[in-house]
Image 1: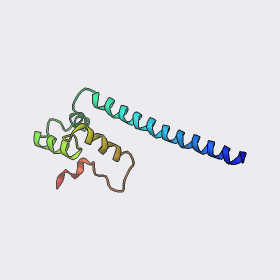
Image 2: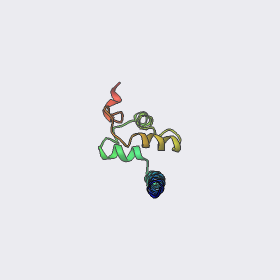
Image 3: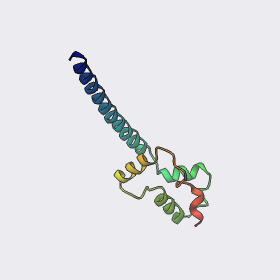
Image 4: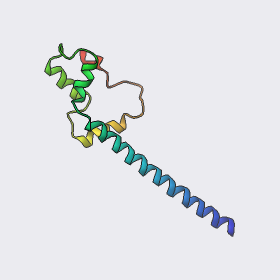
Length: 101
């Protein structure tokens, strides 16, 4: 009888800790995302400036990049897209080289 009660207590403890871990991870991802968004400057301009193509790039191309990276969407949608892109996939959908077509 005592062993069954101990298992129930441990199971409850483990489930409670797992739920707490998921909540903490969610809070941390939200904080990281919004801190990154609070950095000064437009992320697309910073990205393009790193490749030294900013002067040669027309505004239409910058708008196309903004749409490709999802930065033209509301901030909540951007967060969920960012969360979906945390784990790598087979295809790279965020490549500047895909602007050809």
